[in-house]
Image 1 (cartoon, one colour):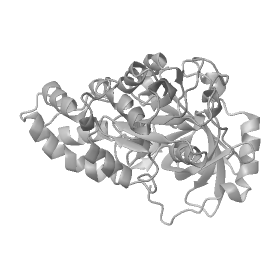
Image 2: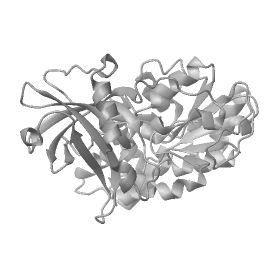
Image 3: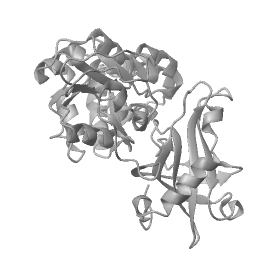
Length: 394
């Protein structure tokens, strides 16, 4: 499961690292939205999703340019969650590269290390980890990466190293995901029964591994185009911000402020036209986390002394035949004409709600008057203040 994305954002950890939470044995009725858990303090085997650091496709593309090749995203998506050795063999074969898998690994691993140090947590990841710690719920990290690489990723995030009860790499067990070995070993090291563990995963191989380990699994799809395939999980959400701990017998979050949730700023550049934002990126990688999904609000700066308040609805849209991010935008103050076709800097600082379904989100995704009212009230509060860096570096 991934906790970050790169350059990025982190899901519970890249290359399908899984976050596992667990406690004393409890029972859960799956595919429900009501709490059916009977637990006193339940340990968690946390499988960090590869979304923890979503660097692979972009780095592969950067690497392939030197060989005159173009990345095939369909093939890259199918490699999501593979252990690195298997992925290296597949990449060399799929792109007919004139090098060995070992030479590929030697060339690309320094690029990975550089990006890992830039990785930022996915929205909601730090929040969940702090919540589990606050209530004394142990959690582990089980990754298909080798242990030394997992430790590099974890060490680049403040406070992560001491947060996990157990950190496991695929080189510490007989087989990586989709084998259940990683999760079973994580539960064993925490001293809990596998059936009392909850796995949070963003990859299909991780979800299969969690189910094979007889654990409950929450899916946070890292590949939104294939989210239907994640239905084998016990529960599917599209953002860590949508995780509802009470469903699994865990304590409720208590951090909502004025009907919204303060978040670490999501910053990006863009242009506004006809009610929509188009992201402007300095490279092929988006500054918006792939798992940003729902209604957010924040601040807009541009070539003017004025600051605008904005509400956005972010979803993935495939209605035009291609899969792309759709960002509907509404300015609470100011005139659209002042901003139209200008490059703007957006800092989203609050989250209002997610959407009920990905298949038909058009109704849910509309920005409502209630969303605007919540955003306006929150942005007048110190809890949602934001001080622009000058000059902004996104």
